[in-house]
Image 1 (cartoon, rainbow, N blue to C red):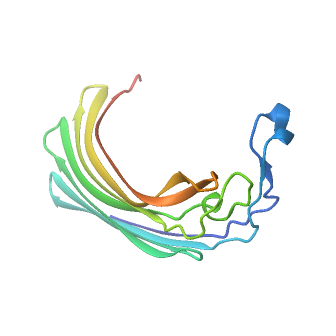
Image 2 (cartoon, rainbow, N blue to C red):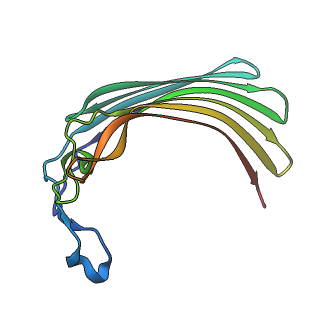
Length: 184
């Protein structure tokens, strides 16, 4: 089974002045402005699913992103899905994600914030091991996951005590359990 797609976006900002603060006292808060020029975003993606055996499926995918202001990135995705029994499914997944900084991170004009036009895009690499156990009307899924985010966009403070954004490293790991019941 193949899934293929593409996207093209040209988001343009207009009337970019805005206020932060309580509605009843908006003039007491600082206003912000961002440049109104746009960015072009193009993406291509594909995914292939193939039954290796009667109870083992391979998933392979790729996504290519191209941002006019942040360059290009290719993100892979791989997975194995094992139907261990009528009631148990195991998934082993790896994926990579890409996120370009938004306009507030890189180009806002404000007395309280200092944008950072030198920010790099984030890339996140995630590995997951999932066990799904099916019951009559419900199931329980348990996921063990680990995500490493390189060049994560995090908030910082400048020497002039303005809020800004910096690149850093972030790791998120954990165990998640989900229970779902179908009432009818």
